[in-house]
Length: 463
Ligand SMILES: Nc1nc2c(ncn2[C@@H]2O[C@H](COP(=O)(O)OP(=O)(O)OP(=O)(O)O)[C@@H](O)[C@H]2O)c(=O)[nH]1
Ligand SMILES: [Mg+2]
Image 1 (tube, helix red, strand yellow):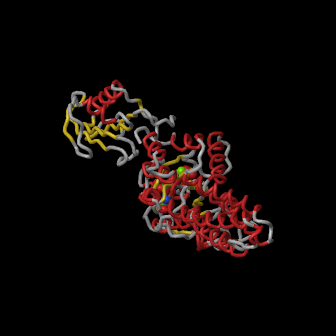
Image 2 (tube, protein in one colour; image 1 turned 135 degrees about the vertical axis):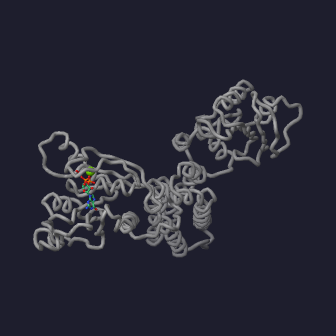
Image 3 (cartoon, rainbow, N blue to C red; image 1 turned 135 degrees about the horizontal axis):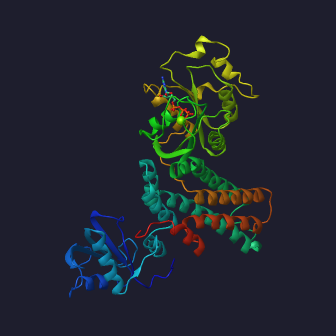
């Protein structure tokens, strides 16, 4: 990744493959000159006007955006051609021959950041927006691109600087016997800032879930209908379903969208003791998901009495985020008929110390008839969001932002405590400086090249 902006970069900005249109984008001091050369023009292009031209044997439309009114803040030329990989490669080659350099992933957005068109929050939001697979992910990223989080952080930073300036002034003019800000007043202002950070952090878990999605594992004894539920949630006939217990042998993972969340749904082998080595491996993988999944969907078959395997899974998932699905309610219930062995009572009294069976997260279901499917979907999203509404978009979705906010908060709390104890200003000021640094890092106003490299290399080429 190059941090120089003195050369002109070029890339195909549209996805690989054939399409109606394809766009080649140039950015840098020579962008307009190169576009002019490719189009064999004698006059310069009119700024921000779509101009018909012939480039590399294709009919194209060229638009030149002079600095600073462009995506990168530099001179930009966009060449819109027919979406043929051959044509686009020809334009790319001609641009390189005229002196452009191939852009690295994210380099256009990096330049926008270096030119001050975007801060780091917004640059990261560009990548999130491109990667979004659910509308909620896209909206949360778009809010950040629009600058909602930027202005929240900037507001906190500005107030922090104000407190710091006044504390420093008190320090610099000790003889005046005048405090620009008393320790009490300073500590109260800082407590307000901690409150504002807390509001942002409160959304962080949900925000991360929206941005990164969650792993949901479907577990249960053999033949209870795990794969059937997996297929139903995916709306696709992905996993093999048969009446033979032990059908699924391996983990199957597919992306699904549930309640606006992007989810990695995992189907697992039915858990039971078996002598079959292949199945044993499947069962051990199934058990392994209990430790890694964000949510466990425990499936029970209500048409047969609870077996020791069911009880074992209920015990193993107790206390973890889980939803219990009672499947096959289209069949007569074995639990009503046989109080004792298979009744709900026996789940509640499953041989595990601690809490009762949590009835609220228990959903009755028939994958065969579809009854209860809506309840299971809302049960999953409720369990994942711990009851919070997913409709509103959280400002904090990115773990980098959350951890820097955590650091700023901790420093503010330390400074507040020191002020309250009457410790001389220079000590709390060290903590306040650290809080300020953390806030500045969020927006990218203090960043190492390594961090920038790390963030921008995840972009696609041409962005
Ligand atoms: N009546 C009824 N049968 C169902 C229902 N859901 C699944 N089944 C049937 O139960 C049998 C087992 O279904 P699967 O989805 O393969 O069960 P599984 O839990 O994945 O089984 P293993 O992979 O062997 O652990 C199949 O014959 C399904 O058609 C349901 O809601 N009602
Ligand atoms: Mg299965």
